[in-house]
Each structure stands twice: as C-alpha cells, then as structure tokens.
Image (cartoon, rainbow, N blue to C red; front, side):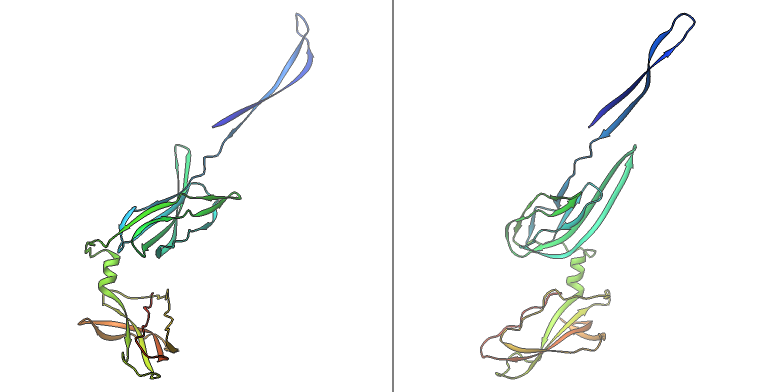
Length: 253
C-alpha cells in the first residue's frame, strides 16, 4: 500500500513579450513524496508434526519476518522436555528489487507423557511492541516403532552411548556406607568434547557427599557384553538413614 502527497508551490511575476505583457504564474516545482506502508509483521510457530508417539521428538520453529526483532522468549514447555535448542537462523534475499527477511528460533522437544497438549505462544519485541506467536496443539500417542536408521542421531546414541549408575552394594545395613559411580560408556565410533548434567538426584533417605574426581581419564570396561570405553563422571558416598526400600533417582545429562 502507499499514498502520494503532491506539494505544488506557485510564485507570481511579470514578464514582457513582443506582443504583450502577460502575468504568468510560475509553476516552480512539483514534489512528490511517496511513502510505503511497512509489510505486516508475522511471528509464527510451526511444528514438524502435530501427532507423535511418546518416544518421538518434535521440532518447533518460531519465525519472524522483520529484521530488528529482539528479546525472544520461549513458552513454558510444561509437558515436554527440551533436548536441543534454542538455535537460530537468519535468511535474507532480494528478488527483483524486493527484499525478504526471516529469523527463526528452533527447539527440539520430546513429550513427557501421552495426551493432547497446547504449547503456549512465544513472544518477541519489535519496535517497542511485544508480539506473540500462535499456540500449537500437539497429540501424543503410545510408543511407536522407530526405524533403525544408522544415520539417525537418536539411534546412534542409543546404540553407542550409555549413562550407567554402578552401586557398590544394593542391600546395605542402616548406617553402612555405599558408593554410587556414574559412568558414561561409549563405543569407538564416538567421542566427547563436552558433557553437562541436566538433573542431579536428590538421594532421599541417604546422607550423601560427593567424592572429588581429578580429571576424566578414559578407561576400558564391559557393558552388556560389549567392550566399551568409559569416563567416570561423578562418584557419591551414600549412607542410608532409614530401613526399607530406598531408591537412587536417575541422573539426566
């Protein structure tokens, strides 16, 4: 859309000619100011699939079509676990003199349970205004059979990487010290440059203390009958404070 503003400025003056004197209105100038309305701002959320199994992952991408947006805020993924993200990408092109722009924020998430869930809108700031995306409804079904694609990162991880808690004794007496050692087993096909714990167990029912590990030394061991390499990531001293069946919660990384 656009509108035209025409500004005409006139001045009077006397001029002589051979035949007669005529007073002319001198048309000095015509200035045309053209202003084009800005393209409409679009901020959208798109998912890779609206229905998935509880053992599958989902890609959700938030895209704005205007440059200069800032302060992106993701929604609360209450019923999902974020396994990767946010990552961002920017795309800009010029076709026949017309510019197009998009900036995206990308997450990979996996459901925590079955059900129908609504992912709330994300928000972003553009020229002082807060803009919200659309909400997205996702249906999570029972587990589905996953194809064993040798190039699929999740399949590779399941086959080649294992986080295991080794307990020194599973039936200690009240007050008897035991050790829990967390090992990260991995095959020869993979290596690591960084590890990070997402969730540390609370060790309810135990007095606990972490045992310092100086550096990560690669060792060789056996896991499920296979020879693998491993790192000892964490070691805990636990002393049960009550009798009965106690549980050591999983560690997440």
